[in-house]
Length: 311
Image (tube, rainbow, N blue to C red; front, side, top):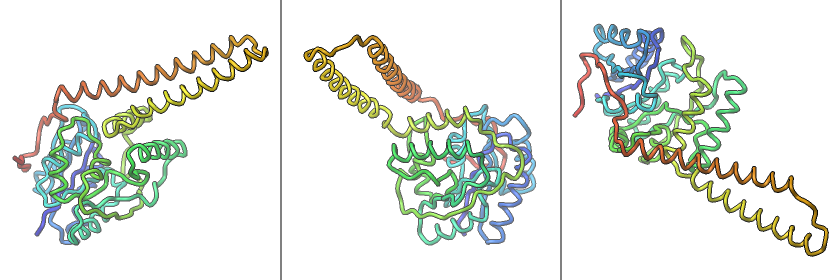
C-alpha cells in the first residue's frame, strides 16, 4: 500500500497537536490509507515539540522535527518535504482550518494519476473585513505579477514523490511553496474546500508579519517589481515631455506664469519615485546577498527517534 506523508508546520501549537493528530489519523485510517504525520515545530517556545514527542512514543506514525529557532513557515514546509518518506506528500495547517477529510479526496485523485492536487478555497471562512481586503489586494497583485491565479490557493495540497523531489532540487534559500508547486508543473488538478474555524488558540500571523511575508515571497519568486521601475520611469519621461511642451507653448505665446509650486511638486514626485525605485533595487540586492551566502534554509535541533533521515 502506498504511504501518504502529511507535513504539518507548527508554531506554538501545543494545544492543537494531540487533537490534530487524532482527527487526521482517524480520517485516514477510516479511509484505509497508510500514513505518517510529520509535525515540524518551527522553533516553538511552548510545549509543541514535547507534545509531538509524547505522541510519537505511543504512535509510530507520529513523527516530528524541532528547529533551533523560528525560520518561518516556508522553511518548515521544505523541512517536512525533505524528511517525508511517503509516495505522496500532503501539507496541511496544524489548526485544522484546512479540512482534513479533503486529504482523502486528494489521495484518491493522486491514485488516479494526478501528481499535484491543489486545494482551492471555495470560501475564506470567518475573517475580518480588513483582513479579507488585504488578502484580496495581496493575492490580486501576486497573481498579476506571477501570471498565475493565487486568489483562492493555499499551502494545502498533495504532491507526488516526483514533484517533491523537483521542489527539493531547487537551490534557492528564499522559497515560496505555494507558487513553486505551481511552477514545477506536472499533471495537476484541483479540489475545493471551505475554510473551517480554527480548532484552538489564535492565529500567529500579525499584520506586520503578513506584510513581510508578502514582500519576501513576491521578490523571491518574480522580478516584476524591478520591471515596474522601468515602467514608472517611462511614464515619468512621457509626463515630463508633455509638461515641457506645455511650458514652451505658454512661454512663446506670453502666458507663462511663475510655477514655483509646480516645480516643488515635481521635485517631490520625482524624488519619491527615485527613492521607491532604490528601495526595490536594494531589496533585490539583499535577496541576492542572502542567496550567495548559501546558508541552509533551516537548522534542525532535534528529531523524534522514529524519524528516519532520508539520504
